[in-house]
Image 1 (tube, rainbow, N blue to C red):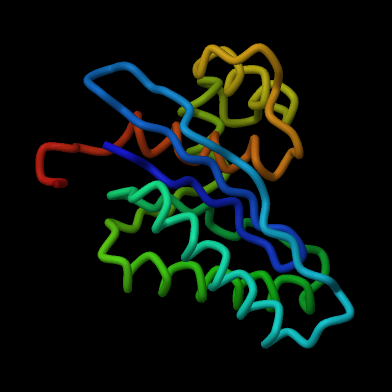
Image 2: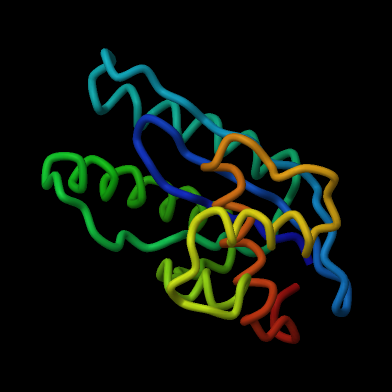
Length: 161
């Protein structure tokens, strides 16, 4: 089973791809899709659509796990990130992926075992769970891997082909 984890954003979309065979998790790839803030929002969303589409074609995941929006101080930013999330969900749906959404609390519990874990703790656990030499960088990619790990720990894979 291949899982694509997504940390949504407009400027930066983190992605992480893992495979799950029985109880073993393996890193397949990770990175970020970035867009320039001077571009119109529609162009930025188009870049996200195109680049995540390429990642889906390359890795052929069966599941897309996306972090839900939690809290934003800036409403304007929250709306733009919500638009990016919408595009990401449609990309996954159009590709025939099973879509799963997780709150930051669920991701923290699945990776660290504690809902109030700090970002650094989550990143250290991503490194440990995937048996990596270093914490994946940038943070958005590490966060996306944590979302993928959450899906791997919480999904019933019997009905996914």
